[in-house]
Image (cartoon, rainbow, N blue to C red):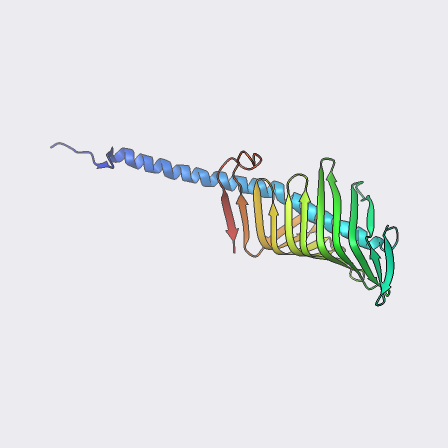
Length: 239
């Protein structure tokens, strides 16, 4: 009795099964590579982002604490029992000798000293000798009693290295070294984009967590974006 060999799509059955196994292995290898890039991106990118947000908050705090002393401004006036300073400006260096500057359209402080409101805040920070960060926020308020800074309305941080941060509001608890940011929160670099509903930063930037539908997208490498990853786009999300 003669044996027979099955065929599928014009190929011997054995070869077809081997080809299927090869494709499955390629898919598994692809998943492993994407996971490796995801972990590497989180390890490298997120601590940098945490530091930038904390630095931005501290810059506004330095600015608010200095008012109305040691700040240059165009003019002052008393309106409804509050001191209004037009175009206040502050510049200096922090404890690590990093230069910073702060500008606002207006700074408003109650004569009783209950807090300071800032309008159209702009800050420039030197993160390291090769990197600078620019912060903008439509509004800010420094609570002198509780030592807390709140930024809100269109907060944006952009760095010369290509990192961009966008969020709706951020509360900086200065005594605790803690920041709570509410979203939508979006952080993007040349190689990835992270989206979340909120972000929490504690211990001065050492601990960082995202919540509420977190999604990380790895961007493909192209001629116009050579710093991104070499493989196609991949994403991972959690509820």
